[in-house]
Image (cartoon, rainbow, N blue to C red; front, side, top):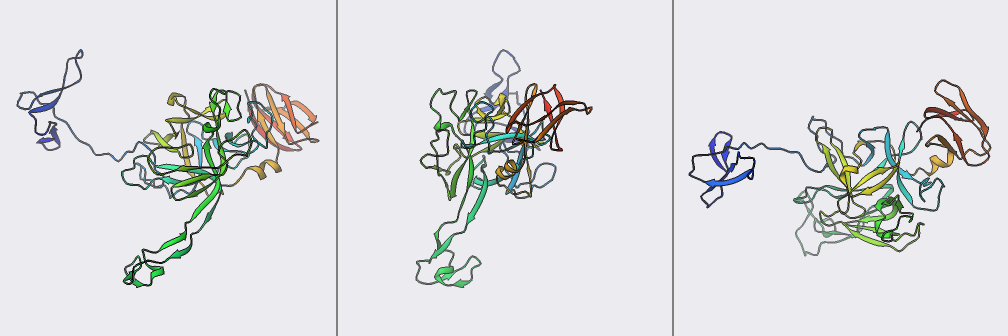
Length: 380
């Protein structure tokens, strides 16, 4: 770049008698190369930008609001901020239907805060972030994480001149060159695509919803640059052989995720997975798509809540699920269910004969009360 005036440059090929100009003729290529000594010169401006393609958590954003270092956060839909991703421990749509499949995988789900009470907190575990020349920060999303500290020390093997991190003289066990005998690691339920377990072309496999691959939380151990999945080849249950995923470069694998920025101002993003696939919400079910036009747009917020399970919440409470022209009440056997419209007019009043009751309801907002505990839902 050759300076012509302050902040204005001619772009030319070093060592060659050529410069870059913009061809004004629409029928010809936009960019052309002309002689360096030709009369025509197109001047270019250069502006520095700190905008990244992928979002990195724990850094300042444009308006000066610094995000705190995120360990636990909630991911929500950017255009519907009351809809959050969560661990669907009872798998209402685990087998492409309405049957609860408690023994199936804990698939990734999405819920509306106006309709259900769920724990949406996720543990954000760094996978490939603070690395040299890395432009795509990668994260692991997990629940129920337990951290195990490194155990024991292998002393420095140098004969003398041991120093600590501050440069103070010390012994071999406290030297900066001493190493842990066993590395620190984390265990928990890590989110992963189940695409490796799905038979080619299958549309009825538990890991497939309407022809699209699903994601599930699976038991795994994160140690160093490896994620060791306890069970990786699923048959619709939680039993399979283990597998190890390497996290050592900028290529995403089935358990690492990147946040491809959609809007630089709000930092909304597409949740990207391996193979240029993105999380899509298909009929209320999170799945993967290779068409970014179909992908959901998310955002993220830090939370002080614990990233644990929804099992206790679901076991203790009643689930009310809105559908097309119906509401389904689960876990209310023997209890009185009352359904009313927004004006308070009773639509139905009955005793639940089982733990899975479906009641016809008009489209719009309805109030479902189970033994006096009311929930508002939107029927399609």
